[in-house]
Image (cartoon, rainbow, N blue to C red):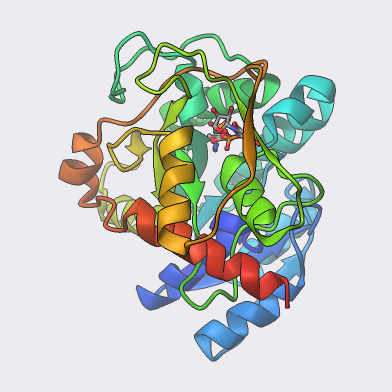
Length: 337
Ligand code: WQD
């Protein structure tokens, strides 16, 4: 079954391409390389021992989407392509609404016009804001988004839900990611932040290898056991496998108007301090860090309740944080060569 993977050269997209092929699907990548590196295509060929077909374009091009759908006989789409930096979205909201909302509408119009019925949507735990009750289930109330990025994920889910309800024959699942970390065991693909990393783990590994002089830990005065924020750090390969499970569930659905959403996390909360300590223990490398004021927009604590994904998706995370940080470190070392 041919699957269009938008953003397929990105961090999560590229790892999902590997798992799709392992599961017998045929992924075709669509990526405009605005936030990914075309070299990833060669790295994927090294991992897979074969090329993966790709198109250098974005999802705002309806005619191209229709052309690809027809020529490649696409039967499903996994939609990763989006802008994802929380801080940048506050400074450039219209970029985020164009890339994350306008492009989604164009994609949905092209899919429904061409009878493509299976969609897996990349959503985020940011839809929960700072939840009152932790861990969060899928029924935890969605709170007003703390950033335009988070809003594009909330609105994206609603657009898909309403489109499915209009009965065009579309089936869709939204996967609410927690914090993706780590890299492929080959160290050929991994997280490739452009410029200064916004996310914690690439900043840790860049500090450990000497690219950054010091990691600032944003906040030591939270009401958590060690004062630092708590997150649910999930290995990117486990996250990739969740997309395959989601596609397999969709394909089995007879209800042509099926929509659902799942938390994709480990179910375990880890503090920033605990992550740093784990990294140092696993790699034997000290991280130079100091505590700094809180970062605007950060929530204190969130991690997933994952029974729905386990029971309905038939998926649960298998890799540990130790493995994820060891893989992230191996990837950073390879990048340095
Ligand atoms: C994690 C913790 C920071 C950097 C991300 C994505 C979001 C969503 C969820 C997919 C926070 C602290 C960070 C640093 C630090 N993913 N930190 N120093 O904010 O939880 O959200 O994952 O949709 O899109 O942005 O991840 O890695 O930025 O921060 O202390 O240099 O690490 O304060 O507590 P976050 P993050």
